[in-house]
Amino acid sequence: MESIRVGLVADPAAPTDIARRMTDLSPVDGSGAWDITVVSQPFTTGSEEVATAMGRLQHQARQHDWDYVVGLTELPLHDHEGNHLVVESDPDGRTAVLSLPALGGLRMHARARRAVRSLVDAMAGPKTDDEHRVALSQPRGRPRVLLGMVLANRPWLLVPGLKSALVAALATGAVATINSTVWLLADSLAWWRLVVATVVSVILVVAWLVIDGELWDRPDDDSPQARERSRMYNASTLVTLMVGVSICYVALYLVNLAWAFFVLEPGLMGSYLHAQLGYGDFFVLAWFVASAATVGGGLGSGLESDEAIRAAAYSKREEDRRGRLARDQPSR
Figure 1 (cartoon, one colour):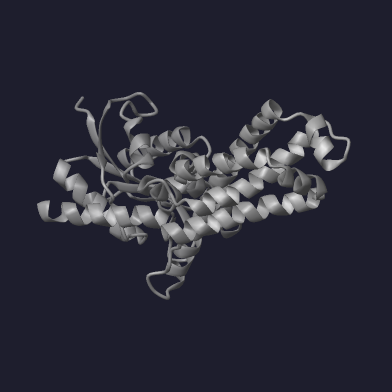
Figure 2 (tube, one colour):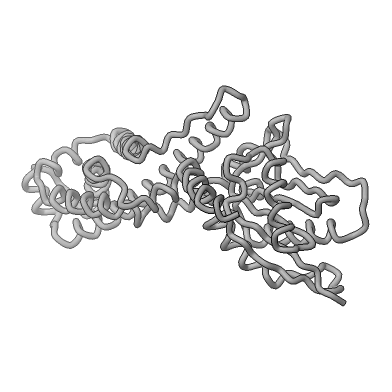
């Protein structure tokens, strides 16, 4: 039996990585075989209108002589009622599109594999009158898609992107840890002031990164769809940056704590402060120093590279997709 030719068209970066792990997919019942080809292309550029994305996928299918084509995108897709879409399929056109963020972000590879296998099986099987669109309900749809978008942004990748800021913060913290004035300030602060200092320091750095990297997305027009898209983009960017900066903060705290234990003695600090101090006070000192150094390091340095910006913001990756699509257009 001749194998079925299946095309997987994936947005660049994470969707392409996921798609390339699916080349071994086969029908659920084990009958026949699938010849799977992966193409990395920004087919969703400027097209959260699903019909436009489906049309581009069908064009790809005709170009490559595929029997079926499935698109994998990192963008949140919507139907005409504003619901977030998980899947849209056109069995007659042998085309389907899968929005990866709508899967929720957790166990993404396994969920995507199951979804793609089900889509191809459904399109290759007998035609039915089943619904060809899977949408998330409004109350739970937005948080699930937002989680998927944040995980698609891979906030942990922001840490190496903030290398210069982290090095500056470490240097600031190393000097501040052995400063007697800092000891006095740390000893005089109540716990709630330290909490406020932590929150404010993280927020200040996030705000600076948004401004410095021009990460804030603005709607293309006044339509509700454009405004909702910008809200989701900006929410995912802010959460991604908060997570990334918080990881840096924790790392900075641990390094400062280790440095304090290495170079300081409670008796020495106590003699300067005229107080009885113990090793437990080093945890408070490292906490205060981490907040001060986060602000100093974060505001003293921008993002290390454009890669960090693209990892944090959907709007920047959308610009990349548009540029790539424009470069590919003349060759068609």
